[in-house]
Length: 249
Image 1 (spheres, helix red, strand yellow):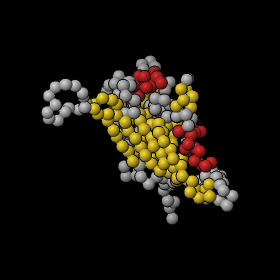
Image 2 (cartoon, rainbow, N blue to C red; image 1 turned 180 degrees about the vertical axis):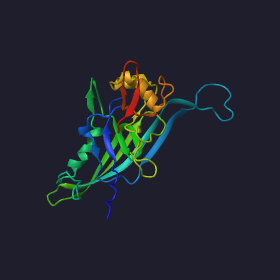
Image 3 (cartoon, helix red, strand yellow; image 1 turned 60 degrees about the horizontal axis):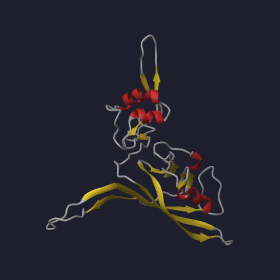
Image 4 (cartoon, helix red, strand yellow; image 1 turned 90 degrees about the vertical axis):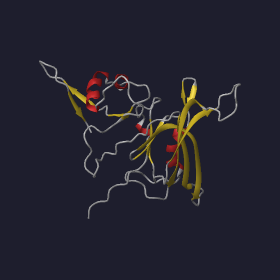
């Protein structure tokens, strides 16, 4: 009998302040149980201008600021449940939930304290933002008073409204292998260029090969949220220069 396909688990990952690169892999955490639902809400800052004049009819409204996108979800953790292979059982559920609480704990950056920028991913869904709020409910205790089960309600936000990010799941339509060149993908921030994006990753000399491999016609102005495969190698041969883009999986 063939083995069942492993269930994809959601993950929380730390990213840098620009939300371009994933960092501090030791702080990444995989959820114990996937959420039942993800709630995404969008809001624009709209105001009715004040002033004198004819007030008859419907007043005009103006967009006065950047939009906001929020993600809300619930996660469950249970110290009595079977742990993934390679992980030790714990006697206090907070030893599991502290990995989530890390993302709301402010860190000092210069003279300011800010929470870590984070990325929530689950299959093809990706959301980058900061954790606004975290509520933990401890619901089951051992005989010696240690909490064994917890429900965590998370709220994340980003100060913009951008095109949906569709993360590559590593499988082609129909269940076949992934097409070379589709992962890993980097999301382009608003106002960025391919040259600056490549330079920030330390591969600025490869931007032309990256543009060619991704079919980018205007590398000086990328579409906000555009997904780009930056994992491109360049080979040069003599006497002429032959540029060949090769994509690693």
